[in-house]
Image 1 (tube, rainbow, N blue to C red):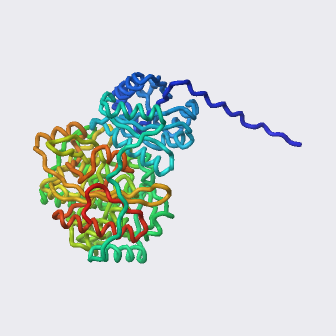
Image 2 (tube, rainbow, N blue to C red; image 1 turned 90 degrees about the horizontal axis):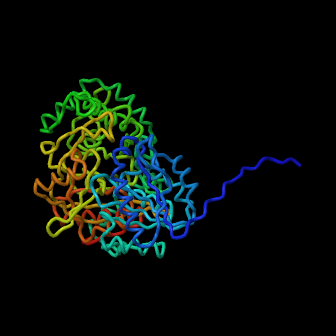
Image 3 (cartoon, rainbow, N blue to C red; image 1 turned 90 degrees about the vertical axis):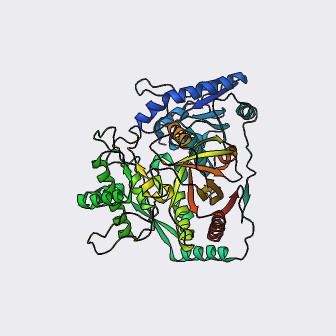
Length: 544
């Protein structure tokens, strides 16, 4: 009888009594990890003090790496190795003060049997809150039980009480009473329109173009074909190398024509000559070529929406994709013709772009575009990161801030929009933004997400408010001054309620001319999603 050498498996370590283990998922980009490390250290110090005060010890699951200059888990392989040395039944806290790549720790968290808590510092300086929301959404999609907690420094009574509850019970629940399932809808014109648009989409079908999938570790943003095909939505899987190749075929003069159009429309470009730190004309020319190339490839494949990954595939190849993305999402934009010059591509309409290839945004933007167009509204839509927020006056005002671009109509036009160089920490080859301060008005906000193996959508209403210029500047300086900002007041949804419920780092927004129209548009959207078989949830004060 033949015998074979069998693998010798290491015994998992035993958990030390009264000990909490911690890990920190980081960025893939070394520059971001090094820059953000002092903020991460402060958060871990604050958290450890709170845990110690409650009678527990903290053991960090991985060491600071002096050669790299940080102590983050910075790859999936590194995460797998770290989790081999963490007791599988121990209480575990993932500590996040920065943007993190969820797949760095997903393998370990999937197999961890002890209670899991995700924590972040309530700060806008670096996107730790954004990272927390992405990781909790990814764990929700994966079906991994977890809790979440956030605090400025873990000395406030609310956070300490939450931490104590989790340490004692292994679970922490927050108030989500603002969420309710969709009730029966009235038989009115809005519901009829939503159902008709759903029938049209399911029968006639649509194609979303995916320029490489899985951007920035956002596991929650990958939607399987089996979930979206029943809606009538199909993927055209494209390579970003094809986008770069098409950019190379765009003549300089066509890119310069885009720049002239934007100059005439009143957009401001903050340019310089230092490629390493400033926005240059050469960077802009590349971005305009990407805009043209994306439209031509979309036309080749008959796409209804498109998503460019950029952050990993293209960041070392060409300047940022954001300026092109913002232009694509706007109705009024520089005209682009087919290669032979015979046709204007997607004339008089946006080509919805789902930033960072977030396919939940793709589904949402496609649905929103069809509804707003059918209702005769401006169909320009965008996502924002749920970045941070503070009370101003009587309201809690969120900072919604996308990392690069919004459609110009959200700012009130190109004459109220500007372009600044992307931060070198994230964007080594630069490129300009399409930035501005979102105009005051009424919006519908939403998020399509995966939970329990099915598609869900949260729908809500909000008002975008105008803050004094000084306060806007303060908020931009507290986050990223280069990026577009929206001051959002959610209707009937508290700060901690949104953080506890929202299953993504991104939120979709679309404007309506007034509150009554926004309510009607939301009703159409609820009806369309429900007819498509998506489970609809209303959040906060929603007037159906």
